[in-house]
Structure formats: C-alpha cells, structure tokens
Length: 126
View (tube, rainbow, N blue to C red):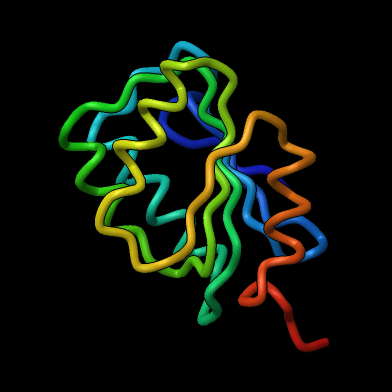
C-alpha cells in the first residue's frame, strides 16, 4: 500500500521484503513540513523495527530546514539514495553528513534495492 505524502510531492510504501521506499516527485522542493511528514511516515511504517530505506530523489531541492529534519531520521538501518544527475549527487551528499547508519548514492533503483537487500542490517527474521 502506497501512502501519499506532502500534498502529493511523495509516496512511501513498505515492500514485501521489508524495505521502505520513499519516492519524491521530480521537481519537488522539500520544505521542513514535508520532511517531517516523511519522517513520521517512516516511523509509523517501521513500527518497532529499524528498516532499510530507499529514497528516490531525482531533480529535487531540499531547504535547510528540511535537511536538518532528514538528517535526524531514525528507524532505518541503511539508506539508499537514488538520483540521476550531478545535482542529485550534490543533494545526496548534503544528506549524508552526521549519519548514524550506512548511506550510499545510486543511479538506479535496481542497484539500490540490491544493496539494501544484501546490507547486513537488513536481514529479517521470519
């Protein structure tokens, strides 16, 4: 089930393998309120578990307030940031500071999901 966030700027879902998938609409400007809503959705969908998170962030802008909130995100064991341009890589780099979990930038969702699936902290007991 996908949940729409930030007035349609994003969707988030928990896939069958336990990976949270957050997708920002290209061209979106992330404000602090958008980041807070996304962080709340991550906490809500995670329950009491830490989970891997893939964030598709093609052609987005992040305000300083949103960046501060995203840097405090918890309930994740690893984050795969997916972009497609040099600007996306710069935005991802700004979100990789002060992290308490592994975070890697990818240019394809397939590679990102593969990394998250293989990440040591992503293994789940069935």
